[in-house]
Length: 212
Image (cartoon, rainbow, N blue to C red):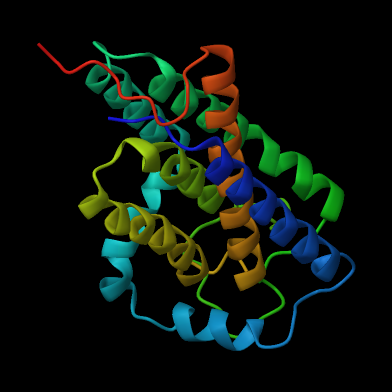
């Protein structure tokens, strides 16, 4: 296993922060953006029975599942340098709180009460931008990406995307909330790796010792 490229991490971090900044500016003071209502209605109209698998995957955006994943990373990498476990733990910890800070600043209302006939399948209060579940899922995906075999990476990101779709299916987020959460999560996950390899002085692209 090799360490992630600092150049790649910095590029992903900068790009995701830029996307988040643009979306934050776009939704500030706006109830919803063009086309968002139609997307929410389409996903929300998927029957509950059909949407249950998505709601199961949605749990990847919760703290307790994220901590289980971190424990698994720590176990997997126990005979290697601790950077993977540290990156995952940092990503989960920051993702758990940072989305609430942005929510309090932007104060974007959620779809319930604004979309007629919406099926609200989860009772939740507070503001909606960015989606906390999506932030957590993408923070995990970004922190796991460097240590997951290439053939599994597409599945990793697909599961994170399903979390965002599920949040619209249950009727509690707009598309921009989900995209903003994805951008924030990627920024957190890549930022966590940058911190981890700096603190632990783990050179980028340096192979770790093989297991014995």
